[in-house]
Length: 140
Image 1 (tube, rainbow, N blue to C red):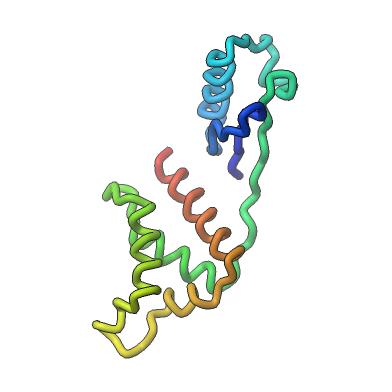
Image 2: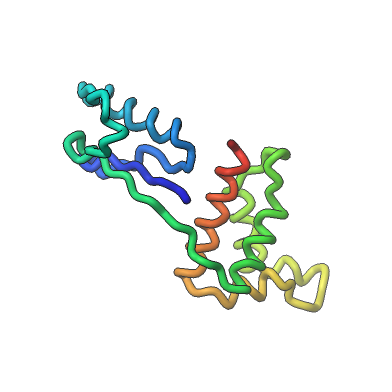
């Protein structure tokens, strides 16, 4: 589960993480930046509204078969230890879909391209969210 920390005054996203220490650090840094000091029970009381901070929990939706195919392909293209950019990985997938680069190598549409073409916009966002969450977990 990811947590999203937002400074409500500016609507600024302060942190997206599942690491409690990162979440707390982002909140404290925000408060220091706005000349506020949290009370000692700031995190335990979860009375963040008085500091203009909101924390939302994001639960991963279940992905359908086509979404799982696309996610698996994204993960295979972006091994975390190689340090490849997640944005470049997504770009390559989209570029392959748009430009039909795969046709140089095969008459068949690759499974991940066919699956991608069947996704709605909302389903694409769910895949990107799952890919981002996976990437964050790999970084920890």
